[in-house]
Image (cartoon, rainbow, N blue to C red; front, side, top):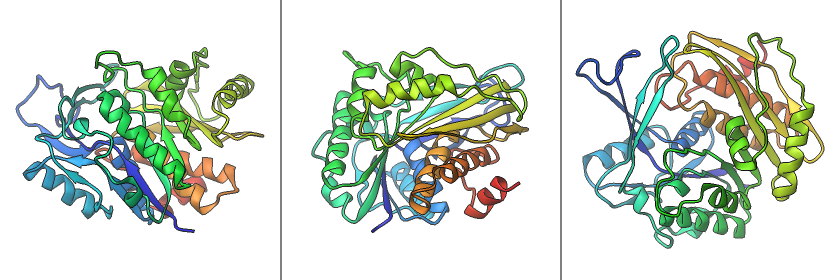
Length: 340
């Protein structure tokens, strides 16, 4: 069976300042590309997987630069649409000491936000593919972009692809009149075979009391029973889904995080180690690195859920060591961390 993976989402320009400076400090802005589904695709390509990325980029030099970057990292861009006038952007201000990071979005009227159903030939894009990965972000941009994502999910389902879905709830994005994030995300999740989210996203979507993750050291002992009850509720609501993955992070301070995750199947809840991450470089894209690790591991060891979870968490942990949105960790580096 083919192992080609298709990812779909918006590519953005990311702007930030050097170090941990605020936007009110200095004159120089640093810019690079990033976006959840592109991050997943580039991580998978780095691991040696065959990946196609579908998006819409604007005409002109910025769109061309984005397209060249995608190709440089080994993504198949044959189904990328060119149209519209601008790229979406976001402004990232890094955390420092006891000050939290912040993100400001500028995505209105972007080329991707103007997508409508029927603009992408999904039957062509999915030909020969086995996995489709997307997220709930498109549902937050415009009603048309949300329906275009639902169209992609429906065709992927018809063609028998395994559907991987990251909840990716961004509360600051759901601004169009009549936006109903829980209803729209639930419609999308009806197609998911694999579901990702962090504790906050699962709490929002399923109205379940948050279970605090208070680890301060890697030997923290978790009580898994409340999570079993939580996953039981999720399974009843979305019976199609075969794997539910939840990431947990305790942010001790700006440069010190503790990270772990859980994977639930119909019959078992899998846990893994807790990583104590200090002196980190860049936390953006950690969740995307986790999703990519899971997809890669699922294709390599489909019947070994413990290995899938261990691999996913190690991949996301290594993302902290790279500047920018992309996880450039290799398979060898991930395996070395798992065995350390």
